[in-house]
Length: 377
Image 1 (cartoon, helix red, strand yellow):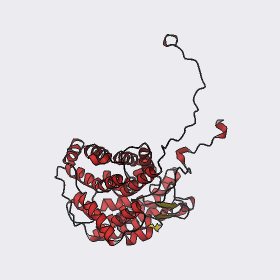
Image 2 (cartoon, one colour):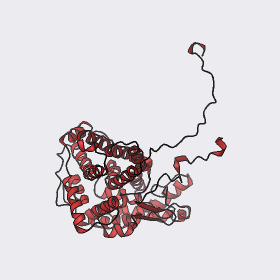
Image 3 (cartoon, helix red, strand yellow):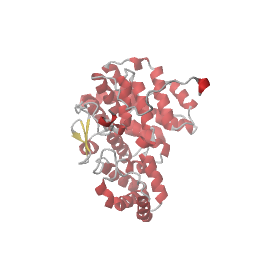
């Protein structure tokens, strides 16, 4: 029997559901949200507009966007008890603190138990606003500072930078953070989205699903690439060392971080927008060295592009965060900030046609055998 069963390890290539949210063409290197090219959204849209698009399926009117933005701004608050949770766990990794805080929100907010679609949407809007609040509050508290109050006059991305650093970001810096969130907002059935859908499939709450998504994202095999790229850049040290670094990695049959992707064989379509952003921010801040190292690595990796080893979005993300002076252990939480609306709609989709997600494992253990009493072993 086992010879007739094909095992798709990691569920690779297995379609488990239909979705109308994002489309990925890995061979062509294309990504779209609700039929709109990621290139158009990254250059012309905002995170708030993209969040609406993902959740509702169409671009918003001016009035719809204004009302949606007002809901996001109104949700920029945390129960006082969450600050207590953050203080109690302040020495922990930011992803652990974020996951614990989201779980605590589920326990503290009575509305979290509302599993209707309207309730899930309301909870999703609050979580989308609260996640960056948690990350910023933890960064302040663990450094002995009082959390910065949100500014209702700032966009989602600009307010996040304001609360994190305590200074108003430039328009270019705020826009680059906005693009970062847009590019990470949704990406199909990756590990964290799948984890969230599995939890919603059990008829659990959205807060529980978000906690599961964050837990999956915390693993370095899923969310840690930007952090690893920054370590690589620091190890290389100078653009002149990049070619030798790549040659040594390839000779040792070791991967070069930031190249290759589980679904893309061509260049990750999101990468170009982060590349342009790094170049601009490097010039603005007078620190071109990081960008020069990245581009030198890209040049050294060109011979391997035919094997599908093309640059991915995380290759540039870490340097953007580094230029902002953001600690390396916050890189993955930033990923989670952007991904929130994608998790919201993935969970809503799962609930609309819910079925308990329960794949099989093929048993390959011992054959049936007799039990031996303990005094005879």
